[in-house]
Image (cartoon, rainbow, N blue to C red):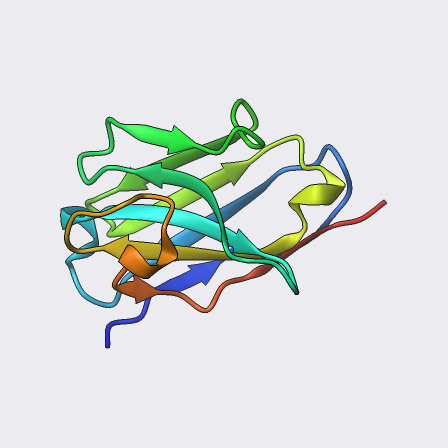
Length: 124
């Protein structure tokens, strides 16, 4: 199964910024919708942001809208999540996921390929 590879996590303070990257070992990432989810222990995986294959359409969870920005560079086969003005409640493991078919954006079960996820910790 194709795996996605994320990078860019870390420990930051409230108000800081981080950029996560999601890459694929195969050149199929530009063909499909990619979504970022996040998860904290004991809770379900939560939708964060999505970007359509062309990159012109994005969607965000209300909790991150205006602070996070999803983008993609299809020439480099990479999707990014720019996270600004981070808050304590943004602490989570962040996963990128690739949807080959058509389905509900916010439903993890609709996605075909996943990355392991970098830890993002926002701590004062």
